[in-house]
Amino acid sequence: MRIETDPEILRSFLSDAAHVPGGFAAGVVFPRSVEEVASAVAVAPAILPVGAQSSLTGGATPRGEVVLSTRALTDIAIDRARGIAQVGAGVPISALQVALASQGLWYPPAPTYDGAFVGGTVSTNAAGAATFKYGTTRAWVTGLTIVLADGQILSINRGEIVAAREGFAIDQGGHVLRVPVPRYVMPDVPKLSAGYFARPGMDLIDLFIGSEGTLGIIVSVTLRVVPRKGRCLALMTCTDDGQALRVTRALRERAQRTWLGEGTLDVSAIEFMDARSLAIVPETAFERSGTVKPTNGAVMLLAQVELNASGDIDETIEALADTLAATGVALDPVVALPGDETSAARLFELREAVPVSVNAAIAVTKRADPEIQKTAGDFIVPFDRLDESVALYRRACESRDLDYAIWGHVSDGNLHPNVIPRSRDEMERGREALLEMARAVIAMGGSPLAEHGVGRSPLKQQLLREMYGEDGIEDMRAVKRALDPTSKLAPGVLFPSVDGSPAQRRV
Ligand SMILES: Cc1cc2nc3c(=O)[nH]c(=O)nc-3n(C[C@H](O)[C@H](O)[C@H](O)COP(=O)(O)OP(=O)(O)OC[C@H]3O[C@@H](n4cnc5c(N)ncnc54)[C@H](O)[C@@H]3O)c2cc1C
Image 1 (cartoon, rainbow, N blue to C red):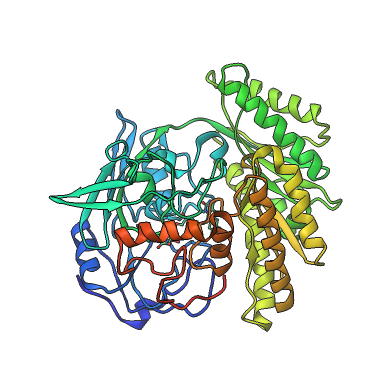
Image 2: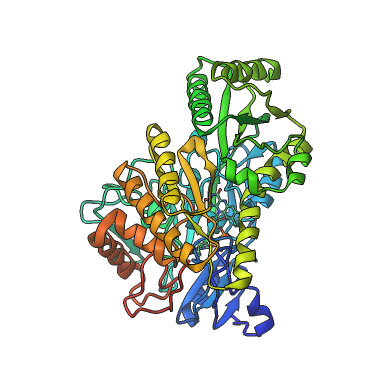
């Protein structure tokens, strides 16, 4: 397998969406088959598998390894009758959805950034806005083909290998590889991307899902897929956080009744944008979405509503209007009706304009001081602690006089408080604020690592230690040692390598 070392080609692989400076790589390979992945693993002393490099944790920024780009692993085979698709790790989620749509199918747990590759989403146990209804990537993976650090190819299907009391015994043609199961207890939240999955009697496939490239290279994935449903989008304006959370609660309750066959309103996702998030978005983004920029501290919710079995849109809109009236929402929502993909795209664009505008504001400060970085949380709490957690996020930032915005997947209890630092000092205070929030989130039974993973961010690695303690990290290291004794795969991701390499930068 040829290792490409041309600096021009390498340049485009030296950073991910966390934009941590200083990435460097020994080379890059573009394997086209599982055998080519295995031969790359055999020759390279250290390997970082990457997908679309949309990681927000620095986990896909190389620190001297050979980068293994999965972009040439692009096979898709759809079995409509069985409701499954076998997909190469390098297939972008957007391309998978196009292929599925041509057969009337759909893959629900897509992250908001649909340019992410299937292998990347499995490695981070990604989750999108619709986790409330559909769960995370984990729930949709039924099979994996993986190349292990010793070059062995492992193909596993869900249910085939489960842990005994002493852990897993993986038969590798006569030789048995023993892998322990970590002893920590994971928080009971709908989405979690916080180190290795751990549960007595767990399935081996779950150990690899969410392992962020540290235990094996995912080459292909078997996913469950479902028939595509009609859906509409509704953009709602609420007076303040309190009203937005009441609306979210009411919509969730109605949706849960509908799933039990007792209602007509089937909401699969609700996104939240607070007043500061909206203030930072340019006026033009609102005009394009057919609405006006709120000026009075109002907040917005964007709900995805699926059509009921009869496909009756009037009944759906009526049920939505009832809920909004009952929660005191005065303004009519802006609605993108089923099939109106142009209006739907414009509403999604408004939601996406929030992180884009925050990043643009930070980029301006960064021009004066390149060390300034985004300081963002990825917190999830049990839904009944959501009001309390939002108040806590605000207190932690306001008591430190920080500029900040909060947005995210509110129907899952998963919000992203983002500090917008105007100086290095504010960035430090922002990190302090996030640590305070994270500790409180853990105390509420939530997780400060919900969907983006841990990567090489020292702050996120500290949050992982806060969750599971040093013993928990030691349990993860024991798993890593069993499967990758020389720390060849994604060294320094999740926890520092024992020898301290590769160099770590703050994210
Ligand atoms: C605008 C934006 C919005 C986002 N929204 C969401 C969201 O809603 N939900 C969410 O969960 N995430 C979100 N993310 C984060 C990111 O998109 C996800 O983490 C995604 O799953 C990463 O996929 P990727 O292909 O880009 O992986 P990469 O960034 O390339 O890699 C991520 C990690 O996975 C490992 N990896 C990649 N491919 C493989 C492989 N084949 N085998 C083994 N390890 C591998 C890498 O080593 C790295 O540690 C968002 C990011 C952006 C920029």
